Image (spheres, rainbow, N blue to C red):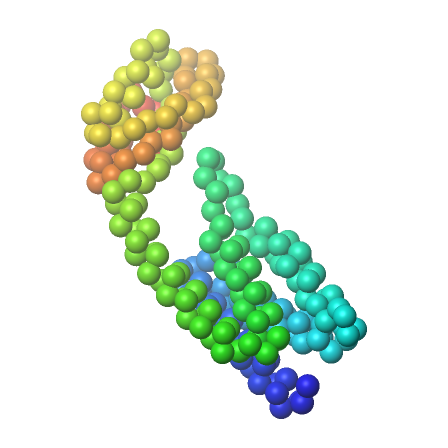
Length: 210
């Protein structure tokens, strides 16, 4: 490859990673601008090296390992909180940035540009779609600590159902006279809001985690 052409590919990878990284940075994600740029740039340069160092029958011997390596990076941004997994979208975005970097490094910069545009459009537009869906149906975790009673679980499940929410009973922990119960509750955001106010005003609840 000519030096000027190589520099063009490097700059293109920085630009593509930067555009996607700006969106991730704006959303305050764990992997933002710098991460996306470095992933795209690194994938591009490894692919360029693979084309230069690989033998006539194996120009992809270095590039093939990028996919494996990027999996470890993506795994680092996935977290499990209670019964919810977060960071999957960011992990997939890192994966697609590596793919775009490899595409640029292979010389298909026009295709990488189209791919970048599609990724940005999807990340932005689907965020609004997801917000609309969350207003209609979202999953919240309720952890309630209350004095133990044989009917207490049925009591609060009835409260959830009265607010048109669907409770799914989770962990139960009894310590002394107190019972801590966790529910995974699904329903509209406005119903969660009203139900939360009712629970916050319930004087029999000693601890409430929403």
